[in-house]
Length: 182
View 1 (cartoon, rainbow, N blue to C red):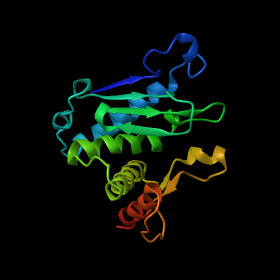
View 2: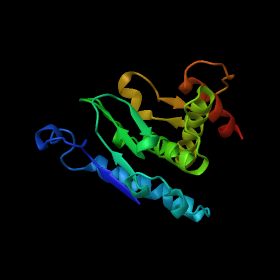
View 3: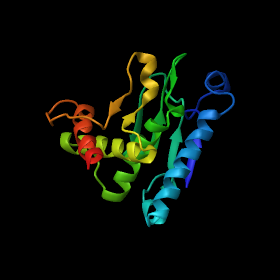
């Protein structure tokens, strides 16, 4: 079960109307989340067992266009995904790769309990979340919508990177690359 909302708590209609009046991003988030869960259920994953978080009655809450920056994150303690936007350029709620990546964080946490508080655990979380996205869409490029910032994508699982300590996202590309090659 998911709750999908398109505005932060306490937001007024005036603050939200310019974000997405037709709720396209909200609908896409719900469809994408449902598609992932349906696929996992077909693979034999017990979806009821995933809903053991003590917050939100075990439901994952997804907020689209909820912050004014091109970023997204999953909050473990809140069982909550926030998808941002860059005004006039990019709504991450409309980027299925990024949304699947964030739902991947939810699934990793619910299945394994890894909380990503340590650097290596954070890199594993990021890498496996990229794998969820790449495998879900059979495409190693994650976040092609980042072209608006002059990038081809946010990350790419098809790479020849050697693992080196640095940012969790750079390390994640190495981890995702191993899975993609396999």
